[in-house]
Length: 383
Image 1: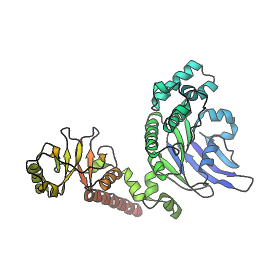
Image 2: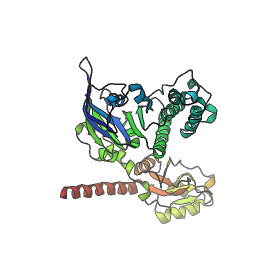
Image 3: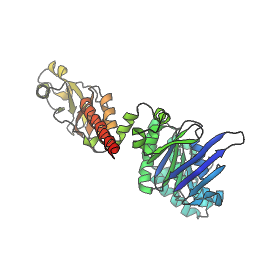
Image 4: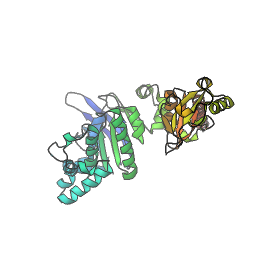
Protein backbone atom coordinates (compact mmCIF):
# COMPACT_ATOMS: atom_id res chain seq x y z
CA UNK A 1 0.00 0.00 0.00
CA UNK A 2 1.13 3.54 -0.77
CA UNK A 3 0.15 6.11 1.85
CA UNK A 4 0.32 9.89 1.83
CA UNK A 5 0.03 11.41 5.31
CA UNK A 6 -0.21 15.19 5.28
CA UNK A 7 2.10 15.36 2.26
CA UNK A 8 2.74 18.80 0.77
CA UNK A 9 4.99 20.21 -1.93
CA UNK A 10 5.83 23.92 -1.78
CA UNK A 11 8.21 25.61 -4.22
CA UNK A 12 10.51 28.54 -3.37
CA UNK A 13 8.38 30.97 -5.38
CA UNK A 14 5.44 30.25 -3.11
CA UNK A 15 3.62 27.83 -5.43
CA UNK A 16 1.76 25.08 -3.58
CA UNK A 17 1.64 22.04 -5.85
CA UNK A 18 0.24 19.57 -3.31
CA UNK A 19 -1.40 20.65 -0.08
CA UNK A 20 -1.59 18.33 2.96
CA UNK A 21 -2.54 15.27 0.96
CA UNK A 22 -3.93 12.27 2.83
CA UNK A 23 -4.40 9.34 0.46
CA UNK A 24 -4.23 5.55 0.59
CA UNK A 25 -3.49 3.62 -2.61
CA UNK A 26 -4.26 -0.08 -2.09
CA UNK A 27 -1.99 -2.87 -3.24
CA UNK A 28 -2.89 -4.64 -6.49
CA UNK A 29 -5.48 -2.06 -7.59
CA UNK A 30 -5.56 0.84 -10.04
CA UNK A 31 -5.96 4.29 -8.51
CA UNK A 32 -6.47 7.14 -10.97
CA UNK A 33 -5.54 10.73 -10.12
CA UNK A 34 -7.60 13.27 -12.07
CA UNK A 35 -7.82 17.03 -12.08
CA UNK A 36 -7.29 20.07 -14.23
CA UNK A 37 -3.82 21.37 -15.16
CA UNK A 38 -1.95 22.59 -12.10
CA UNK A 39 -4.00 20.57 -9.62
CA UNK A 40 -0.99 18.63 -8.35
CA UNK A 41 -1.84 15.16 -9.63
CA UNK A 42 1.43 14.67 -11.55
CA UNK A 43 3.45 16.11 -8.66
CA UNK A 44 1.78 13.61 -6.30
CA UNK A 45 2.63 10.75 -8.64
CA UNK A 46 6.28 11.83 -9.01
CA UNK A 47 6.72 12.05 -5.27
CA UNK A 48 6.14 8.30 -5.06
CA UNK A 49 9.45 7.57 -6.85
CA UNK A 50 11.16 10.68 -5.44
CA UNK A 51 11.46 12.45 -8.76
CA UNK A 52 9.89 15.22 -6.70
CA UNK A 53 10.75 15.47 -3.01
CA UNK A 54 7.92 16.28 -0.57
CA UNK A 55 8.29 19.46 1.46
CA UNK A 56 6.49 17.96 4.44
CA UNK A 57 4.48 14.95 5.52
CA UNK A 58 5.17 11.24 5.22
CA UNK A 59 4.94 9.17 2.04
CA UNK A 60 5.32 5.47 2.71
CA UNK A 61 5.27 2.23 0.72
CA UNK A 62 4.11 -0.76 2.76
CA UNK A 63 4.65 1.26 5.91
CA UNK A 64 8.24 2.28 5.09
CA UNK A 65 9.00 5.98 4.65
CA UNK A 66 10.49 6.40 1.18
CA UNK A 67 12.89 9.07 2.45
CA UNK A 68 14.90 6.24 3.96
CA UNK A 69 15.49 4.68 0.54
CA UNK A 70 18.14 5.55 -2.03
CA UNK A 71 16.30 7.36 -4.87
CA UNK A 72 18.00 5.39 -7.66
CA UNK A 73 17.28 2.07 -5.97
CA UNK A 74 13.68 3.11 -5.31
CA UNK A 75 13.11 4.10 -8.94
CA UNK A 76 14.45 0.80 -10.24
CA UNK A 77 11.80 -0.97 -8.16
CA UNK A 78 8.95 1.13 -9.58
CA UNK A 79 7.80 1.04 -13.20
CA UNK A 80 7.27 4.45 -14.81
CA UNK A 81 5.42 5.21 -18.05
CA UNK A 82 5.12 8.74 -19.43
CA UNK A 83 3.19 10.41 -22.23
CA UNK A 84 5.77 10.10 -25.01
CA UNK A 85 7.11 6.68 -23.89
CA UNK A 86 10.60 8.19 -23.31
CA UNK A 87 12.37 5.47 -25.30
CA UNK A 88 16.07 5.56 -26.12
CA UNK A 89 16.19 6.36 -29.86
CA UNK A 90 19.55 4.63 -30.42
CA UNK A 91 18.46 1.31 -28.88
CA UNK A 92 16.41 -1.45 -30.47
CA UNK A 93 13.00 -2.26 -29.06
CA UNK A 94 14.22 -5.38 -27.28
CA UNK A 95 17.09 -3.48 -25.65
CA UNK A 96 14.82 -0.59 -24.67
CA UNK A 97 12.62 -3.03 -22.80
CA UNK A 98 15.64 -4.75 -21.22
CA UNK A 99 17.09 -1.48 -19.87
CA UNK A 100 16.29 -1.87 -16.17
CA UNK A 101 17.14 -5.59 -15.88
CA UNK A 102 20.50 -4.82 -17.51
CA UNK A 103 21.10 -2.00 -15.02
CA UNK A 104 20.33 -4.44 -12.22
CA UNK A 105 23.00 -6.83 -13.49
CA UNK A 106 20.82 -9.37 -15.27
CA UNK A 107 22.80 -11.21 -17.99
CA UNK A 108 22.07 -9.81 -21.44
CA UNK A 109 20.63 -13.04 -22.84
CA UNK A 110 18.28 -13.40 -19.86
CA UNK A 111 17.23 -9.74 -20.00
CA UNK A 112 16.48 -9.95 -23.71
CA UNK A 113 14.55 -13.17 -23.20
CA UNK A 114 12.39 -11.44 -20.60
CA UNK A 115 11.96 -8.50 -22.99
CA UNK A 116 10.68 -10.81 -25.73
CA UNK A 117 8.16 -12.32 -23.31
CA UNK A 118 6.93 -8.83 -22.44
CA UNK A 119 6.66 -7.87 -26.11
CA UNK A 120 4.19 -10.70 -26.55
CA UNK A 121 2.39 -9.76 -23.33
CA UNK A 122 1.73 -6.17 -24.49
CA UNK A 123 0.78 -7.15 -28.03
CA UNK A 124 3.97 -6.44 -30.00
CA UNK A 125 5.15 -8.69 -32.84
CA UNK A 126 8.43 -10.66 -32.45
CA UNK A 127 9.63 -9.19 -35.76
CA UNK A 128 9.64 -5.72 -34.18
CA UNK A 129 12.35 -6.50 -31.62
CA UNK A 130 15.22 -5.26 -33.83
CA UNK A 131 13.46 -2.08 -34.89
CA UNK A 132 14.13 1.34 -33.42
CA UNK A 133 11.51 3.58 -31.79
CA UNK A 134 11.16 5.87 -34.83
CA UNK A 135 10.12 2.84 -36.88
CA UNK A 136 7.05 2.22 -34.70
CA UNK A 137 3.72 4.01 -34.49
CA UNK A 138 2.85 6.11 -31.46
CA UNK A 139 0.64 3.37 -30.04
CA UNK A 140 3.36 0.75 -30.51
CA UNK A 141 5.89 3.00 -28.79
CA UNK A 142 3.54 3.30 -25.80
CA UNK A 143 3.33 -0.49 -25.65
CA UNK A 144 7.12 -0.61 -25.56
CA UNK A 145 7.05 1.92 -22.73
CA UNK A 146 4.65 -0.26 -20.74
CA UNK A 147 6.77 -3.36 -21.42
CA UNK A 148 9.93 -1.55 -20.28
CA UNK A 149 8.20 -0.44 -17.08
CA UNK A 150 7.26 -4.07 -16.37
CA UNK A 151 10.65 -5.58 -17.26
CA UNK A 152 11.98 -5.82 -13.69
CA UNK A 153 8.57 -7.06 -12.47
CA UNK A 154 8.01 -4.06 -10.16
CA UNK A 155 5.10 -4.22 -7.72
CA UNK A 156 4.23 -0.57 -8.46
CA UNK A 157 3.56 1.02 -11.83
CA UNK A 158 3.31 4.80 -12.22
CA UNK A 159 1.64 6.04 -15.41
CA UNK A 160 1.61 9.78 -16.18
CA UNK A 161 -0.95 10.47 -18.94
CA UNK A 162 0.56 7.64 -20.99
CA UNK A 163 -2.12 7.50 -23.69
CA UNK A 164 -2.96 11.16 -24.21
CA UNK A 165 -0.66 11.67 -27.21
CA UNK A 166 -2.26 9.01 -29.43
CA UNK A 167 -5.45 9.11 -31.48
CA UNK A 168 -8.77 8.04 -29.90
CA UNK A 169 -8.90 4.62 -31.55
CA UNK A 170 -5.38 3.68 -30.46
CA UNK A 171 -6.05 5.15 -27.02
CA UNK A 172 -9.08 2.92 -26.53
CA UNK A 173 -7.03 -0.09 -27.61
CA UNK A 174 -4.25 0.75 -25.15
CA UNK A 175 -6.77 1.22 -22.34
CA UNK A 176 -8.24 -2.21 -23.08
CA UNK A 177 -4.73 -3.67 -23.11
CA UNK A 178 -3.96 -2.15 -19.72
CA UNK A 179 -7.17 -3.58 -18.25
CA UNK A 180 -6.21 -7.01 -19.60
CA UNK A 181 -2.69 -6.76 -18.20
CA UNK A 182 -3.93 -5.66 -14.80
CA UNK A 183 -6.32 -8.62 -14.60
CA UNK A 184 -3.32 -10.86 -15.17
CA UNK A 185 -0.58 -9.07 -13.21
CA UNK A 186 -2.38 -7.31 -10.30
CA UNK A 187 0.10 -4.44 -10.03
CA UNK A 188 -0.37 -1.40 -7.81
CA UNK A 189 -1.02 1.17 -10.51
CA UNK A 190 -1.14 4.93 -10.02
CA UNK A 191 -2.48 6.48 -13.22
CA UNK A 192 -2.66 10.22 -13.94
CA UNK A 193 -5.12 11.63 -16.48
CA UNK A 194 -7.25 14.71 -17.09
CA UNK A 195 -9.86 12.61 -18.91
CA UNK A 196 -12.71 11.56 -16.62
CA UNK A 197 -13.91 8.91 -19.10
CA UNK A 198 -10.47 7.30 -19.04
CA UNK A 199 -10.48 7.46 -15.24
CA UNK A 200 -13.90 5.80 -15.02
CA UNK A 201 -12.86 3.06 -17.42
CA UNK A 202 -9.54 2.20 -15.79
CA UNK A 203 -9.81 3.03 -12.12
CA UNK A 204 -10.76 0.89 -9.17
CA UNK A 205 -10.72 4.20 -7.32
CA UNK A 206 -10.55 7.79 -8.54
CA UNK A 207 -8.91 10.65 -6.63
CA UNK A 208 -10.15 14.06 -7.81
CA UNK A 209 -7.74 16.93 -7.17
CA UNK A 210 -8.92 20.52 -6.96
CA UNK A 211 -6.84 23.57 -7.79
CA UNK A 212 -4.08 24.12 -5.25
CA UNK A 213 -3.21 20.45 -4.90
CA UNK A 214 -5.96 19.49 -2.49
CA UNK A 215 -7.89 16.23 -2.62
CA UNK A 216 -11.57 16.84 -3.35
CA UNK A 217 -12.84 13.26 -3.31
CA UNK A 218 -11.62 9.68 -3.37
CA UNK A 219 -14.17 7.05 -4.38
CA UNK A 220 -14.82 4.08 -6.67
CA UNK A 221 -15.95 5.28 -10.11
CA UNK A 222 -19.60 4.32 -9.67
CA UNK A 223 -19.89 6.13 -6.35
CA UNK A 224 -18.05 9.17 -7.68
CA UNK A 225 -20.55 9.46 -10.53
CA UNK A 226 -23.56 8.83 -8.30
CA UNK A 227 -22.50 10.90 -5.30
CA UNK A 228 -20.04 13.70 -6.11
CA UNK A 229 -18.78 15.25 -2.87
CA UNK A 230 -19.48 18.86 -3.83
CA UNK A 231 -20.19 21.27 -6.67
CA UNK A 232 -16.54 21.28 -7.78
CA UNK A 233 -16.47 17.50 -8.25
CA UNK A 234 -19.87 17.56 -9.94
CA UNK A 235 -18.70 20.22 -12.40
CA UNK A 236 -15.44 18.38 -13.08
CA UNK A 237 -17.23 15.10 -13.82
CA UNK A 238 -19.65 16.91 -16.13
CA UNK A 239 -23.40 17.01 -16.52
CA UNK A 240 -23.44 13.78 -18.51
CA UNK A 241 -22.26 11.80 -15.48
CA UNK A 242 -25.56 9.90 -15.52
CA UNK A 243 -24.76 8.54 -18.97
CA UNK A 244 -21.22 7.65 -17.86
CA UNK A 245 -22.66 5.80 -14.89
CA UNK A 246 -24.56 3.47 -17.21
CA UNK A 247 -21.17 1.87 -17.91
CA UNK A 248 -21.54 0.04 -14.58
CA UNK A 249 -24.83 -1.67 -15.41
CA UNK A 250 -24.79 -4.78 -17.65
CA UNK A 251 -26.63 -5.03 -20.92
CA UNK A 252 -27.25 -8.71 -20.26
CA UNK A 253 -30.22 -7.72 -18.07
CA UNK A 254 -32.02 -6.40 -21.16
CA UNK A 255 -34.55 -8.52 -23.05
CA UNK A 256 -33.79 -8.11 -26.76
CA UNK A 257 -36.63 -8.85 -29.18
CA UNK A 258 -36.06 -11.51 -31.81
CA UNK A 259 -39.50 -11.38 -33.42
CA UNK A 260 -38.61 -8.44 -35.71
CA UNK A 261 -35.62 -10.16 -37.30
CA UNK A 262 -35.91 -11.60 -40.79
CA UNK A 263 -33.39 -13.41 -42.96
CA UNK A 264 -32.28 -11.92 -46.28
CA UNK A 265 -33.74 -15.02 -47.98
CA UNK A 266 -37.27 -13.90 -47.03
CA UNK A 267 -39.56 -12.26 -49.55
CA UNK A 268 -41.10 -8.82 -49.17
CA UNK A 269 -44.45 -10.54 -48.57
CA UNK A 270 -43.02 -12.68 -45.76
CA UNK A 271 -41.35 -9.68 -44.15
CA UNK A 272 -44.53 -7.65 -44.52
CA UNK A 273 -46.44 -10.29 -42.56
CA UNK A 274 -43.86 -10.04 -39.76
CA UNK A 275 -44.18 -6.24 -39.72
CA UNK A 276 -47.97 -6.49 -39.60
CA UNK A 277 -47.96 -9.11 -36.85
CA UNK A 278 -45.55 -7.19 -34.62
CA UNK A 279 -46.76 -3.69 -35.42
CA UNK A 280 -43.14 -2.62 -35.73
CA UNK A 281 -42.11 0.03 -38.27
CA UNK A 282 -38.64 -1.49 -38.70
CA UNK A 283 -37.30 -4.99 -39.28
CA UNK A 284 -33.69 -6.09 -38.95
CA UNK A 285 -32.41 -8.17 -41.87
CA UNK A 286 -29.67 -10.75 -41.24
CA UNK A 287 -27.66 -13.07 -43.46
CA UNK A 288 -27.66 -16.87 -43.35
CA UNK A 289 -25.19 -16.79 -40.45
CA UNK A 290 -27.53 -14.48 -38.53
CA UNK A 291 -25.20 -11.51 -38.82
CA UNK A 292 -26.80 -8.07 -39.21
CA UNK A 293 -27.11 -6.58 -42.68
CA UNK A 294 -29.38 -3.58 -42.15
CA UNK A 295 -32.87 -2.23 -41.51
CA UNK A 296 -35.89 -2.15 -43.76
CA UNK A 297 -38.98 -0.10 -42.98
CA UNK A 298 -42.54 -1.43 -43.14
CA UNK A 299 -43.50 1.39 -45.51
CA UNK A 300 -40.68 0.38 -47.87
CA UNK A 301 -41.84 -3.23 -47.80
CA UNK A 302 -45.34 -2.17 -48.80
CA UNK A 303 -43.94 -0.63 -51.98
CA UNK A 304 -41.98 -3.69 -53.09
CA UNK A 305 -43.10 -6.53 -55.31
CA UNK A 306 -44.35 -9.22 -52.88
CA UNK A 307 -42.02 -11.78 -54.42
CA UNK A 308 -38.90 -9.64 -54.06
CA UNK A 309 -36.18 -11.34 -52.01
CA UNK A 310 -34.62 -9.10 -49.38
CA UNK A 311 -31.07 -10.02 -50.41
CA UNK A 312 -31.62 -7.95 -53.53
CA UNK A 313 -33.09 -4.92 -51.75
CA UNK A 314 -31.12 -1.87 -50.60
CA UNK A 315 -31.15 -1.70 -46.81
CA UNK A 316 -30.48 1.10 -44.34
CA UNK A 317 -27.32 0.58 -42.29
CA UNK A 318 -27.73 -0.72 -38.77
CA UNK A 319 -25.23 1.65 -37.14
CA UNK A 320 -23.16 -0.45 -34.76
CA UNK A 321 -23.90 -3.33 -32.43
CA UNK A 322 -23.48 -3.94 -28.71
CA UNK A 323 -22.45 -7.28 -27.20
CA UNK A 324 -25.24 -8.45 -24.91
CA UNK A 325 -23.21 -10.74 -22.57
CA UNK A 326 -20.36 -8.31 -21.88
CA UNK A 327 -21.30 -4.72 -22.76
CA UNK A 328 -22.99 -2.13 -20.57
CA UNK A 329 -26.23 -0.19 -20.76
CA UNK A 330 -24.19 2.75 -21.98
CA UNK A 331 -22.96 0.75 -24.98
CA UNK A 332 -26.53 -0.33 -25.73
CA UNK A 333 -27.81 3.24 -25.45
CA UNK A 334 -25.05 4.47 -27.73
CA UNK A 335 -25.95 1.82 -30.33
CA UNK A 336 -29.63 2.80 -30.17
CA UNK A 337 -28.99 6.54 -30.48
CA UNK A 338 -26.70 6.03 -33.48
CA UNK A 339 -29.05 3.58 -35.19
CA UNK A 340 -31.11 5.05 -38.05
CA UNK A 341 -34.02 2.96 -36.79
CA UNK A 342 -33.61 4.13 -33.18
CA UNK A 343 -33.05 0.55 -32.10
CA UNK A 344 -29.90 -1.16 -30.86
CA UNK A 345 -28.75 -4.44 -32.39
CA UNK A 346 -27.58 -6.84 -29.68
CA UNK A 347 -25.15 -9.58 -30.63
CA UNK A 348 -23.46 -12.47 -28.89
CA UNK A 349 -19.72 -12.88 -28.39
CA UNK A 350 -19.52 -14.49 -31.85
CA UNK A 351 -21.16 -11.50 -33.55
CA UNK A 352 -24.46 -13.21 -34.35
CA UNK A 353 -27.66 -11.34 -33.62
CA UNK A 354 -29.45 -12.07 -30.35
CA UNK A 355 -32.12 -9.44 -30.72
CA UNK A 356 -33.12 -5.80 -30.95
CA UNK A 357 -33.66 -3.28 -28.13
CA UNK A 358 -35.67 -0.11 -28.65
CA UNK A 359 -34.93 3.23 -27.04
CA UNK A 360 -38.17 2.80 -25.08
CA UNK A 361 -36.94 -0.51 -23.64
CA UNK A 362 -33.61 1.10 -22.79
CA UNK A 363 -35.43 3.97 -21.12
CA UNK A 364 -37.31 1.49 -18.95
CA UNK A 365 -34.06 -0.23 -17.98
CA UNK A 366 -32.41 3.09 -17.15
CA UNK A 367 -35.45 4.15 -15.10
CA UNK A 368 -35.17 0.88 -13.16
CA UNK A 369 -31.55 1.74 -12.33
CA UNK A 370 -32.61 5.12 -10.98
CA UNK A 371 -35.48 3.60 -9.01
CA UNK A 372 -33.14 1.03 -7.45
CA UNK A 373 -30.79 3.85 -6.46
CA UNK A 374 -33.69 5.68 -4.87
CA UNK A 375 -34.64 2.65 -2.79
CA UNK A 376 -31.01 2.17 -1.74
CA UNK A 377 -30.73 5.81 -0.70
CA UNK A 378 -33.99 5.58 1.28
CA UNK A 379 -32.81 2.46 3.08
CA UNK A 380 -29.56 4.22 3.90
CA UNK A 381 -31.52 7.13 5.39
CA UNK A 382 -33.56 4.70 7.47
CA UNK A 383 -30.37 3.24 8.87
